[in-house]
Image 1: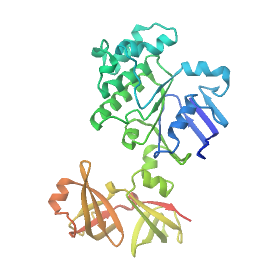
Image 2: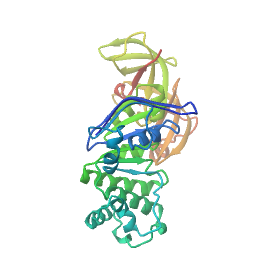
Image 3: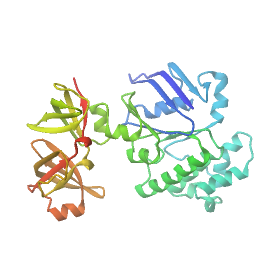
Image 4: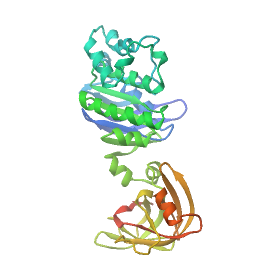
Length: 353
């Protein structure tokens, strides 16, 4: 659906967007995540043909998207939804029908279908300016799908919504995407929202694609410290591989030895990455078969969503995600002594210079 290579956009501020390669298939939901100022919206605007690259190639649906002769055809085949709904001062029905009207089309069935899929049929006679935020976002999405687009581009689609509303809309959107089999590209800082929707994922930082692939690969096996930090790896430790037997490495860090499944070799300088959800905390020295087990002192314990984030001193700093029941049951509080354990397969090594 989208194929771009060596795409470059330069700005007077000195910022440069430089994407060497990106391929997005038809029917695929592709998320681009990154911090503020990474260039996410700029890249999306290039795909939407709203900003012309300085150089490079961009193909959409097999056509040269940078050729003026193809622009109108491609724009008619795609929909763009911005972070704000931008609804007109008219009924919800007329808002959803607007892209069809602009194309000189009348398709009441398509409008009714889009309203039904996003569960706002009962609102179609309401003025769009009277809708709640969640209802407004549903109307904007219904409007985007009224033309049955082959490509849908979303710019921070849930940025202003609370978690409950965001989750319900995201689930409904995923169902609608399946119905229409459209290719979807969306950019966001919201990693949870990206994981809810996407089949593939790319991390964009400082105008460059740092890593792309399956979401679980990126979150569990980041290619750099910067990516690891952004995708929520709470513990990133500098270390050195002391030895390796088969694929099991002994890594020295903070005066301790960690056992890690990796293809790194003896002498390699590495970063050891440990996600908080992969760390178990108990009062027992029995690690339950885990190769890494350390007596630790609790430094802090603070609420973290529905869980608690616990910082531990194991000779090195380690962060664990534990349930409130476990915090209460084990008496986890600053100064308490516990055991932290994790599997050798739960760790990830990143080679460093």
